[in-house]
Length: 89
Image (cartoon, rainbow, N blue to C red; front, side, top):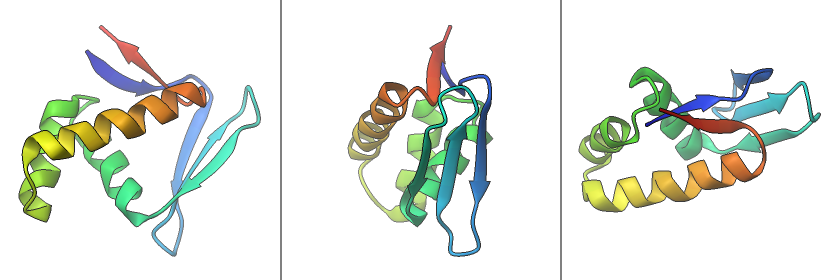
């Protein structure tokens, strides 16, 4: 399963390292800090595959991959609840 932005969602990395996600359909605009920016970039670089993104971030940040995957799962769930991402088979 892969995590994909919902149609009409744009992502912008701001000069301060924050990530801004905006949904054209709902008007939802949320800004996230630099840690979440790195998480978003890792997810997108790995074509929505959370295991691969978690492995990359765990290596970069020297944390347990299971802990990193858990953090990604929680955050992606929040993004889904906000209507910004969806699971694709």
